[in-house]
Each structure stands twice: as C-alpha cells, then as structure tokens.
Length: 557
Image 1: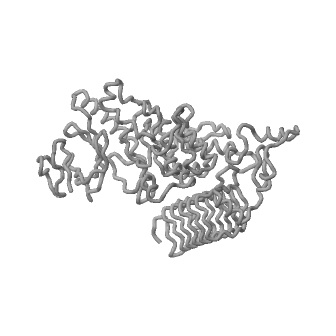
Image 2: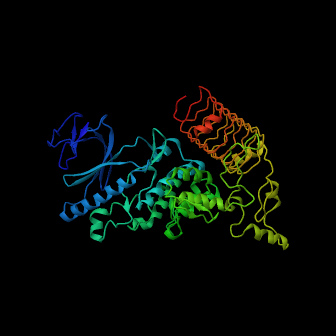
Image 3: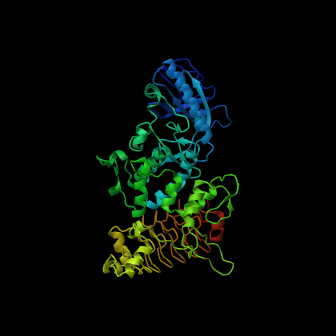
C-alpha cells in the first residue's frame, strides 16, 4: 500500500505502484523519491512513517518524520522553518555515531517539514521486557555500559535528547547493538529553541519528553544534560521491575519515584539508582562518566575507553604519574581515576589475564571487595578509624551470628569468608538471597540448580559442578571458575568479564548475549556452546576448544 500525505486528502490509501493519489491527484513520491508504506507512530507534532527510497539501488527502507505546526499563522510557519533547520543540523552532526540513526535528507512540502532517517530493524527494550520479562541487575548494568557512551557522545555534541525511554532504544537485529532513536524532542543546548512564552505555546510545548520519564526541570521547559540521566534511571527501573513509571507510586511531599520495593538489587546499585533519580538536579549525576565511576565498572570502562575516540595527543601532564599523556575522553578519565584509587599493594583493577613470561599458567585477575554500602560497613568512617576504635578498647558493632555465617561485621575488617555448603547456598537462594559476592564455593555440587539473577562477583567457584544449572543473567565478574563443570548450563546474558574459566567445561552451554570480554578462556571447552550475540574477542575464542557444533557470535556454526 502507498499512502498520500497531502493534508486535505480524504482517501490516502493507494496501490503500491501508483504514481499519483487516486483521491486528490497529488504525487505519491515525497520529494520525488520517498514512497510512504505505512505509519509507525503518531504524536502532537506530526507522525512517523516507514518509507522506501526509490531513487537508490535496492530501494532501501527509511523513516520519514513529519513535523507539522499546529497553526498556519505566517510567523509560526517561519519560526517552525528555522527550528526545523536547526534540528536537521543537530541530527546531521550527531548521526555519525554508529548507535544513532543517520540523517539522510530533510525537505519542506505543503507547509510541512520532513526528516528522513536511517531505518533500524529490531525490537525495542520495551518489547523485550514484555516478551521475556524484567532484566536482572547484571543485565541492566550491561545495558548501562552500552548506552552511557552514546549519551556521553550526544552531550559532548551539546545536545540533550529529552526522551530516553525503553521504547526509544532498539536492539539492532544484525549486530545486537543498542540504538537510540527518536530525536524529535532534542534540544540544542547552545542555542535556545524559544525566547517567548507565546512562541513556546505555539510550537515547542510538545517537545518535553514522556511524562514519568522526564524530570521536573524538563517538564518546566528547562532541561539540562542531567535531565537525560534522570530518564536513564527511570528506564533502569522499568527494565528491573517491568513496570512503567505511571504504575509506580510517588512521594506526594517530595515528588520522588517510589521504586525500591518493586526491584531486587544490591545496596550499592540501589544507591546509584537513587542518585540517578534525584528530583533535585544539583544532587543528581551530571554526566555519563560520573555514573560509570560510581558503579566502579572497571571492566566496562576499560573496553569503553578503548572504543571511544581520543583527543589530540598534545601531551598533558598525568597527575597520577607525572608523565606526559594524551588528552583523555571522560570515559578514559573515569577509568584512570578508579585505577589511581587502588591500594598500592594491589595490582590495578581490570588487569588482564595474559600469560606470564615467568610462569607456566595464567594470572587471575585480583578479586575486588564490594563497596561499603553493599557489605554492611558504615560509609561515614574509614578503615583507619575502625582500627583506632579497636586500639582504644571501644566495642565493635556486630554479633556472633554474623561471624558464624562468615559475614563481615560492621566496623570490622573481615578475614577470608567461611566456605558455604551446597545446602546452605540452596536454602539462602530459596529464602530470597541473591548476593553471593566473594563467597568461597570451591568444589560444590550444584547440578541443575536454578540460580537466575544471582551475583557471584569475585567468588571462588573453582571445580564447582553446575552441570545443567539455570544461570541466566548471573554476575560472574572476576569469579574464579577454573575447571568448573558448566556443561549444558543456561548462561544467557550472564556477565563473565575478567572471570577465570581456564579448562572449564562449557560444552553445550547457552551463552547467548553473555559478556565474556577479558575473561580467561585458555583451554575452556566450548564445543557445542551457543555464543550468538555474546561479547567475546576472536583472540579469546582462539584460546578455547571449539568444534563444528559451536555456534559463533554471528549465529553461524
């Protein structure tokens, strides 16, 4: 079907091969080349259509966005034309990012304005949640690692998106990358869109984003870069809870979103979400680098910093080493800041598990401790203060039950954790515990156990038997899994960055969408494993054992 977009056309549907509208007689090819195939969405500003470019070889699909003023007053039309050109220039500038649809064309017809953008085939995150259910904490962290560099790029281009939400994030079919779409509400932060209230009412009042996802200052037509950070926080809550913000309660006195009871996340990640969702702009995260630094996501930062464009190598002094270093992106500076805070007696976080020239084996990545908020240590003090309390004879908080379970006691620097038994782990999981960070689980027999959504970050799972277990979305970051049995396990979307999987048995394992960058795969048996959409480098795969039944990242054997 071919559609006519002439404003007064009463019967816009036409045969697919028609040259002119059978109802009003106007040409059906917009700007002489774009044939409208179907509608994609409708809004107060106009509509979005799927179109076909009949001037290009192969006649590829594209997205045609119609921008229509609400009045035909001459001064409003002129203002709309000026704003339209600014928006086209902005989209042309930011469309060079591989995770932002490219601007292909823009034109004016019949006092209406049209943008033509690249068509992205895939499912939105909203559709993914409706089909597969809510994300795990590890899954949301992986999502943040993908979208935060895109937001950083947009903001460095002096653009505020103003409509971050699951429906505007598409998982592209051919490479599984997230693509941020729908820049209809973008604001160029350098040049104000409107100057007077009358102009604002006439044309730009629609461009305030989506209620529930947009923060108060944006609804008041005063968006800032941190407004996108708030919308990102609401998006994370949607992914975790599977609920739209309109289905959640608000604090009537502060306006804060009451989301905590609807999600199950670690205390530290909850504190990050709380700061993202601060009603006050002043107390909210200001940019993407701050969020990544707060999450302490060294593995992500390493890979992201390597993928981001660096500035000119002018040779500024490095404050941590005193040496000359190139200009760094915000992501690289955040990674450097985290590394510089490591204890001097420990190797830097994110050290790769490369073969040593002096040893025959692989060095394991150091296990990092969880932040104080997640372990029970009080954030108001520090380790020196706690030791001072002990030396002065002051009582230390906690109880014997905490010590007997191997949990760190408040105010006390804990020693190696007591090894849990298989029955203890099963019982804890059944009672709702999901955080097994840094636990000693060496050699446990956990065949076919359901541990979905758990966190084993930094734990010792050497020689553990998880044959046929359900480990979808589990966080195994920096975990030792040497010679572990993971045969036929469901590890879809599991996070395994910097995990030590040397000689582990993953025959027939489901690793679709798993994050394996920086993991040690020397001698790992991946025969028959499904790696479709997994994050893994060719060098890593070359160190593992594969066969003709192994499904590689592109979905082919």
